[in-house]
Image (cartoon, rainbow, N blue to C red):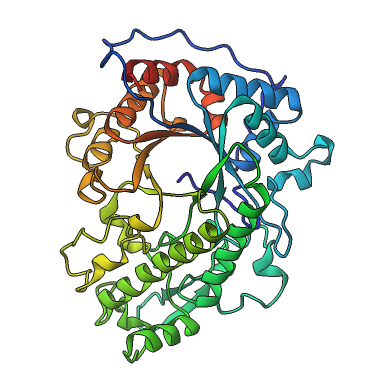
Length: 435
């Protein structure tokens, strides 16, 4: 999803979305609508993401919250994804920036949920359970004690002449999205399950509480030099223990020339299975205390690139081909372990005709996912869209495509919709789709 710079388990955006008076900018004119797709249809879920500090300037007081909840519902959206933050060792769930904005003086999360109780809206808590600090600010649980020493993600950086390498802790990589734990370890998976269950236990009493959405449960993106994460001495030991293979050095995964090492495919499987086991651990723990709680997970819609970060969001029935996959890779599929997959159709082009030589169009993503998660699967798929990339017309068309071809809609996010005046585009898309 949109890059998040995360304080301890809190989504933190770099931009501000306030204007001089904090008010709503008048909407752009309503575009002409295409003919209605049908008459009466069963409605599909429609959601808006509220990311942490990015939206805080819009939520300075209860009146502002009331206004944006009313606008969201008027647009046709009745579900909110709301970024959560865990204060480690406590049961606190707060938008991180509240700690830096004492003048607000009220619990934004609790107030939003209470208002949603009254407005017949629903809330899904967004969690980034592997993220334990900001590498830019060097703050968070990853930096406060030695608890996570050796258990964060590491990358291999080759020397300029490629004759040797060094292993770099993500905590020391200021260009990384966050300080991210390595899911290869049982203690990490247990921690993730515990903190997610903590949030559910705290908020499940609300009528509006619907579920929890997981993000960044994966290995970090490769850096600008192409170095992958999933190394480190502890990682190698865990790999050897679970696979029975003996590693000479980390070039056995990706060789000195940047190509497949002798155990590349086994390494890909191991990382992917670690991610899937983390998701399963979270799901089991959460369902124990709240069986009705939905588990959602967001990931990029481009399935073919997901092996590089260890995410196989397909069902176990999908058997891929390619040198990067060993026999049994399909068993790492985690679609059956979640209730809703939030398909990240984060393409700036809407229709295939706009970019026919690329798979990066909304239309392509929402019409091809069924090869990975069949439409008769128990796992639902909601198409999600990047509002920051669209004008009103594109927002309308992308909304229509998601609602026609998937089981629901998620728009990222409130601040971008407000700043780009996309309310009418979303509403027109919902109305035109018939859902």
